Structure formats: structure tokens, C-alpha cells
Image (tube, rainbow, N blue to C red; front, side, top):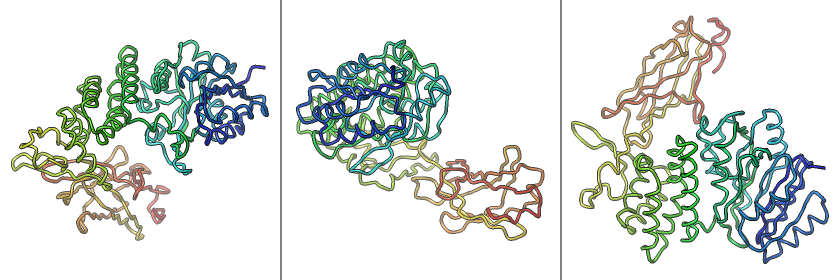
Length: 481
């Protein structure tokens, strides 16, 4: 009988990890699956372990080929796969027990072409959030698309997904040779899909290896690896330029956030920088001028130093970045007109080193951060207490204004300052009569001519603070907040 889901697993020298991976696949609550294992010419005990699983569980099928790389191995597995749905797993990773059931059930409900979910990073046996995927799955959504939900440009891995087989074949999707074969396919699938389902649950545990042969992704700072990464980036950009040009800026920004770090690491460690600087020039030529100009200021400084071949200075900046666990400072400069700059290495030497001021320009990175720490009801009125500051700016906010808003009305509050960053206010509930049942606190702050607004957060949470008016009666206002 045709299985509901086929999982394709390339195998190459993963003896310390493959048993855990295959056990996680065997333990899936969706048991109507087949697991197509493709031994890509392993020279350790990986094939023997795969053979044992195939002998014990008839849902496991083992193929073999000479070492061609993960892309050709996946293609070979796809030719063998019979399932209505397709999935991929790497043989050193782990799939949570209910992952495939959740993804398949979602597709069956919505009719979307692919379903994807959040990813955990396995580091020394501890599951952490994947920094690559964390922003993509904060707000799950069904029947969406990457052109509407552009944060999905960050979801460029193939193994946290389930695909409809007919969609895969209709789109002509296939893996190219090379070590970054999955990035182009993941982006193509997102763009070609009619609709995509996003679920917030973690559906895949991506391992950072701590034993055995180092994985491809842990050799990312090697020169051949960097050339292949650039080839994958160019492939994705060519596809997006033709099919979804509105995604190019987001993709380039992600390359500057994530991928280029490995180029920096190579330059930090190298003895001969010439070949790497030539490669760096090719990287920067590939990306759009807009993405380069709108990168965060500290990244712009790193890019400027690379362009000029200032490797020693780049190493100092990279060390500075690693040392700033609490963030970097932004400082004002100017008498008549105040500009805001990142206080980074070489900022005070920028003119002597001929580094333009705009490299350090960080005005767009300043954020007003306000939070309500306490809201108490006295029986007659509310007392609010909180903090307000400009993130990364070591100065007191010179002027603060507060309003309560229900989306239609704005009720100004009188502000009392307490200490360097403290603020307090009193709310008379009679002033909220006739308004909505829920009010948010809007904050306006000013320092050195810089004026920003923000909604106050609820303590240290990321959610907006809200004042709920229970019962729509003055007598009900004694409910605690």
C-alpha cells in the first residue's frame, strides 16, 4: 500500500547520532510512513546501523550510492519514495514524536502545498531556540504565503516541513549538487506554493555536533565552503529576481545578518587574507546596494573595513562585538543639529582613518522602551509605575508624555518622574467612561531633539500592557490589574 508520508534521510558518517535520529522516526505518532535511508558512501558504522533498522522495521528502506553529497542522496531517495506527502530529515538530527502528524493533519485540513514549523537547536544535549528560525514562527498562520508573510524568507531549510508530493513534482523541485543544496529548494518551494501553513510548535531538532565528524554547517568558515555558500545565495537571488523580486531585500538582509558571519570568521582566523578579500568582494557585489546601505551600523562598519582590506581593524571590531553582551552604545553628536552614532571602535578616529560618518549613523536603531511594572487600585483610582528609556542611549529621557488609548479615544495622563528612568501616573476611571473595555498606554519620549513613540510593555514581556475596565461599572473597578 502507498504510505501517507515518505521521509527521505541522507546518511553519511554520522555513527554517533544516527541511532537517535532513526529511533525518533520510528516513534512518530503518524505511523503510516516510510523512511527512505540513502547511504551516501559512509566509511564509518552508519550503514550497519541503518541496515539493522531496515531489517527490524519494514517501514525503513535502505539504498546505497557512492559519495555524491546530500543533494544527490536526497534525489535518489525521492525516486524511491512512494508517499502522498514528502519530508526530509538529516541523519544527525531528531524529529519530535508528534511532528509529522501535526504537519500532515494541517495540510489535510487546509489543502495547502506545504506545512512548516518551528525549530529547536540541539547544543550539547540541550534544546535551544534556533536563531535562524525564531522570528519566522512567532505568529503561526494557516493558508499564507511568503509574499504576504515575508518573514518566511528566514525559513530556508527543507527538513522542518512536509510537502504534498504532487506539488513537489508539479514544481519540478530537485536538489543540486553541493553543500548548500537545500536553501534554493526551500526558497523555491515557498514561492511556488499556492499557500503555506505555519505552526508554532517545534517540529525538528537541529543538532550542533559535539562528536564524530564535523558537519558541513560547522565547517562554514572554510574557503571552499564559502564559495559554495555564495553559489547558493546567487541561485536564490536569480530565482527571486524572476519570480518574487519583492523578497530580494529581505533575503539580502538575512544574508548580511547570518551568512556573512562565516566570512568574518574566516578573515579573523586566516594568515593570508588575499583570497578571502577577493571572495568578500564577490559577496558584496552580489547583494543589493540598498541592503548594504540599510544594514545595522555595526555591520556597516564591518563591511566598510572589508571593502578596504582593513583586516586587523575588522578583527578588533569583531572582538568588540563579542564583548558587548549588554549591547553597544549610541551617542549624540552635534550642536545645532544632533546626529546619533554607534560608539564603536574607530568612531573617534573616523576622520583620520577616512571612515565616513554615515557608516556609524545609528539614528534609525534608537528605540523608545517603556514598560509598566505595577498597576494598583486604591478604591478610587489606578496608580501606574514604570520605566522609560531610549534603548542603547545612556541618557535620561528629558521629556515624557503619556496617553491611554482604546483605539478611538486618547486620554492624556499627568506624568511624574521618579529617578533616572522612572515614571508614574494616576488614572481616574471616570475619565474612561464611554470608552472601550481595554486601554493601552502610549508613551512619547524626547532627548536632544530626538522624539519617539511606543506602546508600553507589560513588565519584561513582549506584549503590550493593557488596562482592562471590568464590568463597565465604577463599582467593578476594584478588580486587580
